[in-house]
Image 1 (tube, rainbow, N blue to C red):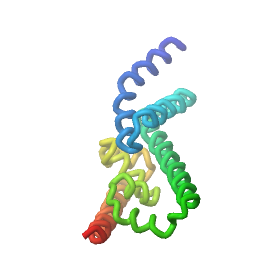
Image 2: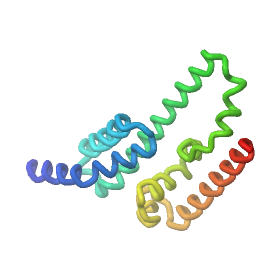
Image 3: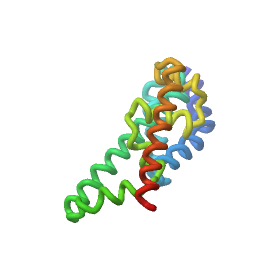
Image 4: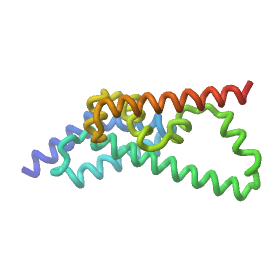
Length: 163
């Protein structure tokens, strides 16, 4: 029993780790952090192995939460550096002028951010995003639409500031 469990976990790791780590890499823009997040997602899966019915979904949702925590930590660090360097008045204009999609996705409310990350960054179909988030497919579609509209509006404002 234990041997088959270890074999299944090993096969799952070999099949999913590279893609999960690559997905995390695109979100955090750092190889080491991406591998740490992907490894932590697998560690958490292993701890709950017998209770998880959909390991792939569990891994991606866990990784998305860890990425969000990473982004929050970076934002706290940025705020601390801004306070120390007395550049508070200049910084907000620079952030508005930076149309980085990663930063824009990061700024979305969680109910919109998670479907965007799962659908567009993890290439999951809407049906699977619906199952993983516990929302109806129509709700996921509406959330994806709302998120795209917010991103589009923010990009327009950012581009207007740079012209």
